[in-house]
Structure formats: structure tokens, C-alpha cells
Length: 145
Image (cartoon, rainbow, N blue to C red; front, side, top):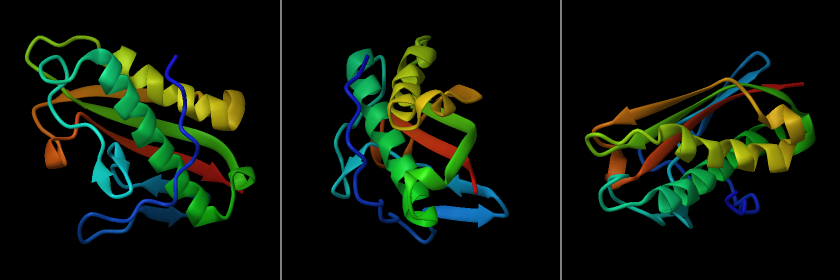
């Protein structure tokens, strides 16, 4: 298991968008990458320049960033009543097949902070590239009360 980071400060957008959108009782995050203090902590393609352990660390950071964005939007972890979905994009080398292992690190962070409510429906998708050469990007949809 990847050691989950504490929740960071709410991430700042890296372009012309907002970190979250609220629609009724849903909060959707923008894609969150493994940024620490606004800088990518890890870069490169998973299965090439980035091994699975580093990709898992990146997924943990990105998941903490996504959860932090939701918490900032709603005013606290206690306002989250569930998670509807998480999508984990993995900047994968040709032939890479361990997407689920990478995504599991993101789920582990959510479970640490939210208990079993942090385990949600999820997709792990391999992609040819991500912004800034990030190894992972995470989108989260939370249910809030």
C-alpha cells in the first residue's frame, strides 16, 4: 500500500478552468495530476521512464489533490456523503497492462480519508500522453450533503 499523503491545500488550476464544478449534490473535479505546491512531482510515461511504484505514488498524490479540491468546494470531509466515480488516466507505454495496480493507490488514499465510502466505481484508462508529461491524471465525482 502507498502511504497516503495528508490532504494538501486545494490545488490551483493550471489553465483557464475551475478545479471543481458543483451540480446539485454532485461535485466533479477537473483532472488532477501529481502536483505538489503547483509543480509536477513525477513526470514521464508509466512502464518506460516511470515504474509502477512511482506511478502509484503519483496516483496517491493526484487522488489527494482531487479530494482536497472537493473538500475545499464543500467545506470539509464530513460534507462528502459518497463517491460516485473515479477515472484514473495512466500515461502508459505501449504494452503496459498494470493500470489497475496504479489506480489502486488512488483508491487506497480515498479509503484512508473516507473509510469504505472511499471505495467507488472506477475506470483505469491508458492514454498516449497527459498534460506536462504527467504519469497519471485523476477525475473524481463526489456526492455531498
